[in-house]
Amino acid sequence: NLAHGIDRTTTARPGARRPPAWEDHPVAEELSRADRSSLAAERGPVNMSILAALILEPGAQVSYEALCRRVEERIHLLPRYRQRIEQPALGLTPPVWTDDEHFDVHWHVRRTALPHPGSTADLAAFVGAEASRRMDRSHPLWELHLVEGLSRGRTAVVPKMHHALLDGMAALGVGMILLDPSPEPLPVEAPSE
Image (cartoon, rainbow, N blue to C red; front, side):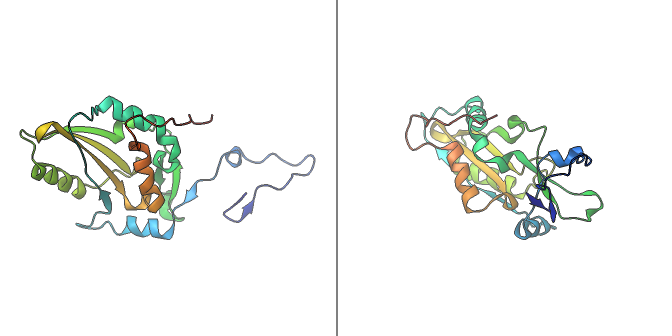
């Protein structure tokens, strides 16, 4: 276990002092240069969020409660989605990913309704407005919007993630949390305690 150049796996001599309590906890992971660059790029009108819109046909029966439940059941498959960015004091060291001790899936999964009749232009306007709104960096950098009221009884799911959170595999992970290859949900192993 090598973190910040300190080897914490060495065996202490008999009678040596016990390491401080903070050494018993996992070390937070430093953001990559690319992640730091995407955060630094957010200046003026530049926003580094990535969004998509999944339009679900009538009969999909997606409710806010079911969407929250789905995320709660599967978020352990994407541990980064429970982490927020912590800026060290005085900015003397790079920011780190750290577990959000106050993680609340209901803060991340949001519900909105389009005005009747809910056209695709209305959905595009909603996505555009969300794309221009910066994410709150005191929480993990993702949101999931359930958009109701689309014409012909359709709904939409709009995932929003910050570029710092994403790489190719993480983007696939969002699909893994939300979607199943068949109408029957795949069994997902519960997180180990």
